[in-house]
Image (cartoon, rainbow over all chains, first blue to last red; front, top):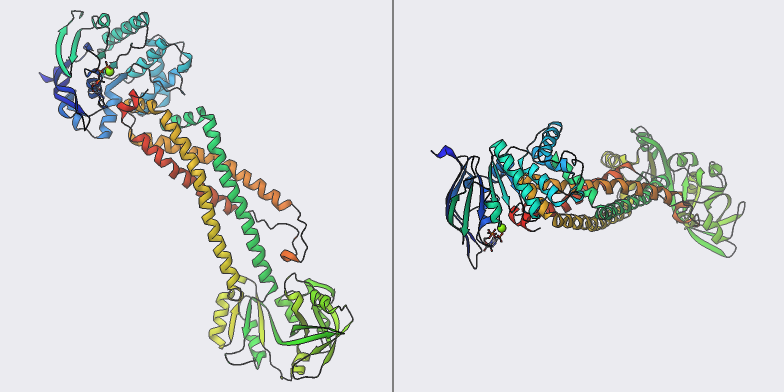
Length: 233
Length: 388
Ligand SMILES: Nc1ncnc2c1ncn2[C@@H]1O[C@H](COP(=O)(O)OP(=O)(O)OP(=O)(O)O)[C@@H](O)[C@H]1O
Ligand SMILES: [Mg+2]
């Protein structure tokens, strides 16, 4: 049965601080299927980013296990974590975090180059990806020559270029107006359907969350609601 | 090598910081090359003039004896040794020279001018007259120009020599020399046989000078002569041990000074890199999220240190070369009797100085890069990403 889940989280607890302890995640259990398009909601400080960073193996838990594709990432060495992040995970943040000294194409090429892909091949794959997010005509532009929405699209292309099985987004539209947000959501939804990649998105926007397959509500580090939205096709 | 890409982009985009660190490194490299060239110049001038103006090895009598007897055999033996270019036996004694009311104490050297010329080229330093004029045993004397000035005598004048235990005797001045050393004030040459007669010593000498084709072989050869003959053979290095030690000490001091200069430039580079690391925190976090290993992050900033260092080294070498060449080209208005008759500052531009300064600078730069690079590689990716 377990092969069905791309992500399996068991008894995940994260406590911050040595003096005053903050339980950011409290015994969380969660299973996510391959290809799911889901939203995480909850009040500020409820542990959404913390959970996302645990799934993204950017941080280590205080206790509990996380299996990505059946492999326990909490037992990985630093090097293995880097490789897993590069190959299996794509990241989108509220701010695009593009490298300012590189143009759009070079930014999208970066995960491929980190993976050791040849430059010529990386260029081909990256330009295809940029075209897919609708920026085929902006490849040579630097981040400061692009709009917020365009930069976020470049960031999405970068997150997806290595064909990761899991894409996580921490308020990926948090910095955009509602029209640009809608566009980004439609783009993510389309990519999710085309590539059957798993998307986990943190959002404060109920309207956006309603467009996903599944919504999780976090309060005080606990999952208090887990609902299907009936958007599945 | 995406690490190199990221490193070069960082440097290209931070023009001001780059300029600052290149100036710091190139000034350090340039100044040190100039210093090394000048130090090298003074050292080589000092050593050249020493090895030119002195016998490379001096053989002295056995311990407790005043003379070397039967020296002709020794002379021949030494002549046959490998690397020996000239041997000059001398008889040395103290005397007072007198002209009218002036009197000066001198060291009288009895020599055979032809032999002596082969050990130290006295001809070269003649201001007037001929050194070889004292070839035959006669009452002729060749003396230093300062001594002549102090006695107020000139060519052809007659001076009276007071030798302990002998009648005063007159010498005619047939040559005046100038070496640019204190010898100009205290030394006079006469024919060796003449001096032996005056001292009634018989056919003996007080010492023997030897010239070698390679002055640096003198230490070994002197030791060899010491062992073989039981005479006391002293190399020029031993004779000038104090000056050589002084040179070495000052070289050591100068290295200390180099380290300080490089240290300052290293701090400059470290400072620039720390600024870049702080500024690029979010970027470093994102690179880590994309799967860049900590090792690669470290490498990026070490590469930046190396690139900044390399640019500084190239500029510094050019700077050092141009400045050294310019200093060497300046004619200085100092009296020729000072500084061994030079009219230029002694500058020796040596390739190995450029290598030393460059390697030194690169090592210091990379050391300076280690701290910022470690700091970048140790960053917590979550903190780095959310810091923006
Ligand atoms: N590095 C940290 N050190 C200490 N406490 C932390 C740290 N990171 C998060 N926390 C705490 O953990 C809790 C959860 O934080 P988290 O960032 O996950 O909240 P969030 O749900 O993402 O909130 P927001 O919607 O405002 O982004 C908060 O109380 C926060 O103060
Ligand atoms: Mg958050």
